[in-house]
Length: 269
Length: 324
Ligand SMILES: Nc1ncnc2c1ncn2[C@@H]1O[C@H](COP(=O)(O)OP(=O)(O)OP(=O)(O)O)[C@@H](O)[C@H]1O
Ligand SMILES: [Mg+2]
Image (cartoon, rainbow over all chains, first blue to last red):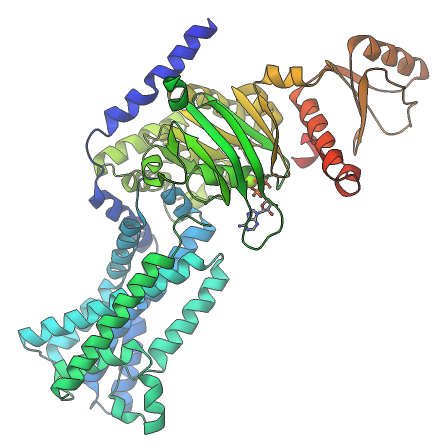
């Protein structure tokens, strides 16, 4: 009797899982999971969050537009794009810490066949989905006021992509270190002040008087704003400055990516 | 021989020290058990149950030592192991703005299922736990126990062969808990379940193997019968502290003092003679065959005295009733 039960216990053990996954697990599904959990379900259940994502980049834009009596509209729109991208990383950080610390959802994913790369990619894309309404509004404004050539547009998208990757790396690295949500908020506030409020994202850097200008150069958002303003035609940079800005932007993105992949913790220690 | 190493969970001097802590959360834990059926880990708060579960579920790196599950090295082959495992962490909560259906199917998507398959499996699992009716209600509208069940359904819906459940029945009512046990027993035919609990009757009802942790050390391991045999007394008496009873001198047995009274573990003859004396004096008491509760009380009490006479030995040992 005892023996028989033993055998029953062991037999189906392996066959069941083999039946389900002889084929490969779908990466697409794994990415979709993050987009559903972190963006779509939330947007569906709380549509009010959408208003917020549209308003926050637009409110700064409106402010600059009014104060400059309309002269800085191009810079403000480009700044709005850059800030949306940078904001993706800040919200990624708080979303990740929320899911990790308050729901232990990340622990469940760590103990599953999802790699950190796929988890992060899914979460990052979910932040883009979240910013989509804002990006659409900005896109309409861009088409109306800025009108870039196809080549400039490609350059602009590349700048935005760099900004996105940079902010995602920062967000992920900090999120994996935080052990509670308050700690995480403290980090994300600091970062968004340092990288988005102080640097000249919504207006040209020449508006900042000289000794302070050097402070602005500490932030990667400054370089991307400069490149974007150049591409949009509101400032005209010499070739060397464009090259230097690009090199700095790529270097910062690559460095942060390395830090994120080396230092961020998936399995805790 | 080979078959045996493939079908086991083994820990070899597994030790964990968190950060700069001086204490060992796990202290040289060493054991080897079949990786089938249900393994239940019991121990007081802070004894290291969660730490051990998290290390084996590849969430946490041990400080030193080695562990393998079904021949897969926990430290060196995390990717291979993650293909086979699933966990419900102790403090996991279902996301309140999602429905049980969304919670389970998204977890399955993370495991790489196709969308349709994920939905189907999710529904099956909810039905199995009798939550089919709430499949599309927001989790925040469910009761606390049902939210917990949703998480359990999540890993049950998956194909994982090895399941870690860290205190899965906390917050379930007694009837739900018993139903949950039945389900776990069924599941354990297909997969290895590693479960931690504070409910000793849960261990009694479910466990093929029981491990007892105390202050990070594994103080006992074995089947319920083996645990019973490891205590050489077969009767347990409980006597209230007041009115203070005359405590007998025991030739064979142990007297332990807890918050709810004295607990005497002894052999049959002694138990009866003590019972006779107590009855004569009109004292209240109970006599029962030794339960897991008694064994746990005994092991943890004794370990406490052994490791630190002043601090831990003097501490009052609490039992199940108080903790619940
Ligand atoms: N992240 C952490 N950092 C530092 N110390 C920790 C951490 N997690 C647990 N500990 C310590 O490790 C020891 C074991 O904790 P663990 O959570 O494994 O116990 P447990 O048996 O699961 O307890 P409980 O029954 O209360 O859940 C405790 O002393 C605890 O304080
Ligand atoms: Mg625990």
